[in-house]
Length: 318
Image 1: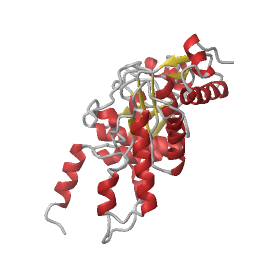
Image 2: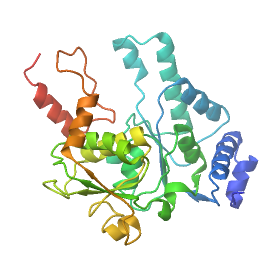
Image 3: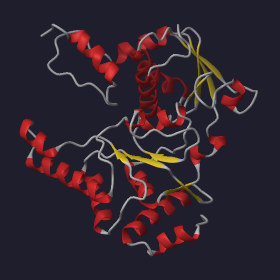
């Protein structure tokens, strides 16, 4: 049974309103499912809303019960529904879902950032901050690159954390669960951001759900990584292999040395990733070269640097 503070028990008892009580009930259920001993406060939150009916139903339920966010979360892309209804072929039903979701998140107190990469500029945690982030690229980036601490939250659990201001203490919030489990020697050159996407795709096929410690043996600038390369590495690993944290030897906060990365002087397992591995997965996921009718860039959202690269590639082409 999870141990609650006085304030947390009051939330659970409904002393702070029905909406907060509902959110706290869900947090307590998660805590009991994962045998969390107690709750801990968060400093930041991010909710990966997708404007689907389930997200809409949940947030409207909390709003109807009077819930308000203690910690204002940033949110994943929605739309300016008034503009989108004018320039696209969205049905009236789709527009209504977007409009209602947008309004409900505003009422509950979210920061309407419409951005799946707020960790790059608007919602940036520090080392050891305890936070609650959902979204496939956000969780590994904040855990790995910043050394903040979050579990792989759903949109609903992250919203409950934003309302209550606390999360159950389990999983990646605990130091012992963040240690590396396998040393990955990357022998490919890794000259481009897209190489990191390929690495993130192929690695879970090789190692499963283990936490990797990367050693980029042949990278020209070993300690120079773009935000785009790291967010795409994490996004690919998290969506294809449920890997919500990684370490880069000599670069990420918890991997200054091998001993720090593995929390031991023993490396339990080791694997090499070659250029052939990356080439094979690129061939597997790529269609034959030919004329295209439509191109979609992201998700995650492109950085300004990536947009600049794309514009240079297509400049002067029809």
